[in-house]
Length: 79
Image 1 (cartoon, one colour):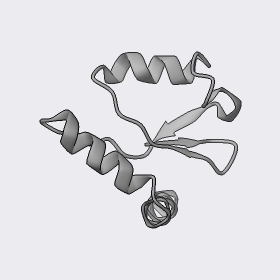
Image 2 (tube, helix red, strand yellow):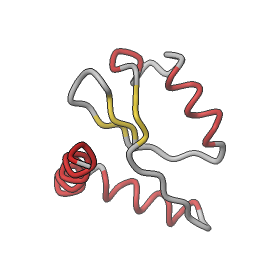
Image 3 (tube, one colour):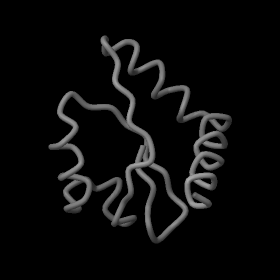
Image 4 (tube, helix red, strand yellow):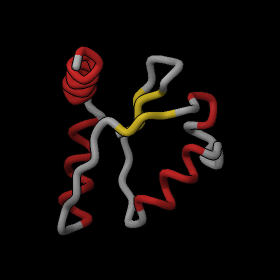
């Protein structure tokens, strides 16, 4: 999960190649995230299967998942 440093925006996604995906996002290569650059990584989870990762991605994209992420982000900023 990426958090925009400048705006209130979270990006939830999954990938097989984390390093490439981060470079793509931080360089503005991804159209979805380009307007929200730059980003901080606030959560990274690894799963053994694509299905498991997809289920978690869907959970985090729900309204309750986003609330949980914003709460986690607020706690991190306090530390």
